Image (cartoon, rainbow, N blue to C red; front, side, top):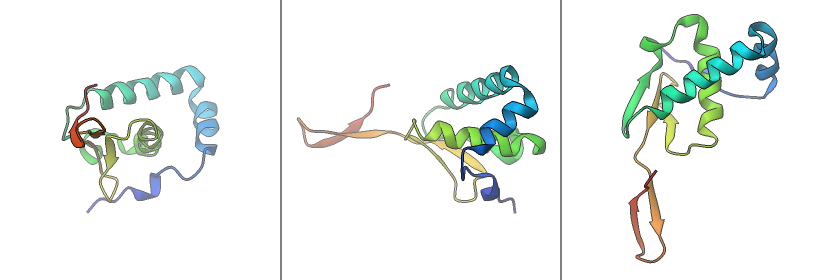
Amino acid sequence: MDNFIQYRLNDWRWVDIYKQQLGREAFDMYQDRVCRALLGLRENEYYDIAKQVKVANRDLFIKTCCQFILTHNDYEFSNDYTKIIHRECLIFTKDTGRLTKKNS
């Protein structure tokens, strides 16, 4: 059984390391592709990292996803970090006192 928890974001040193390894332009392009792929997920759809991400790219992919999640709270990892899921986002509407679907 796969478990990719070791790749999660623990500090920000990885950014400089990957920028140095890949070059800034390639690093930025990779991050952009990952973000576009995640934004393309429909609600309750997931990205299967084990099946869709090359082994050599898993560390960078998961760290990029962690960074993405910091500003997109309707995305989350599975407990073992093998999937990233776009959850349905509900917000509490003060006027009605109810949870309603967030309009993106």
